[in-house]
Image 1 (tube, rainbow, N blue to C red):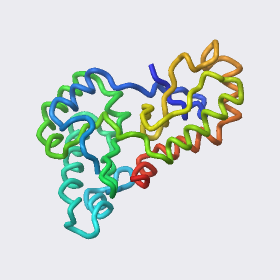
Image 2 (image 1 turned 90 degrees about the horizontal axis):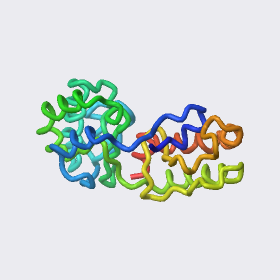
Image 3 (image 1 turned 30 degrees about the vertical axis):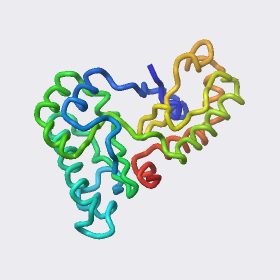
Image 4 (image 1 turned 45 degrees about the vertical axis):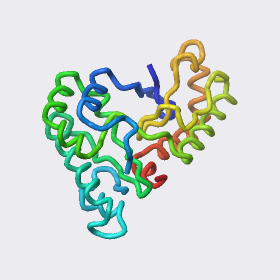
Length: 217
């Protein structure tokens, strides 16, 4: 299980997670390929109009149909059992960042319902809501600074993240169990390292939000 490294700063290591088989089934079952083309930048929860404006040089620009399709797919996901799901962020460079955590935390029956109801819209938007593009430079740099700090404070097994390291928007990179000291998050070593590195880990969290990821496109 992967644990959000950035969440160390908050003292509550939420499972950051590889997506469940049910989640993968939902999205791959009706959307384009996981590495599908990307995409105009809204902040969390903005309307379709805001998404369109962010990704085009003007209203009706080339990004507008994709932005509208992404918004429609997100609306369908919300209406069929995942109300916390935010609209994906479509960057000017064509990357799509998606609010993966609500998808990961959803039950298999709800996933099945979403798959059935939203398959056509997900395909039209070319959206795979449980897949993220490679981590952008700003996020990687923030993650490396956090990892360096943790190693300097008694956690030598923490690895520097790369563009290919899994991450969850709003929660940062993941760490495997082997990177924790003996005793895991309850150990004094972990507690002291998390306290000492809190500012850097919080910076990683901020760099991983959808709004920040959108600005990296």
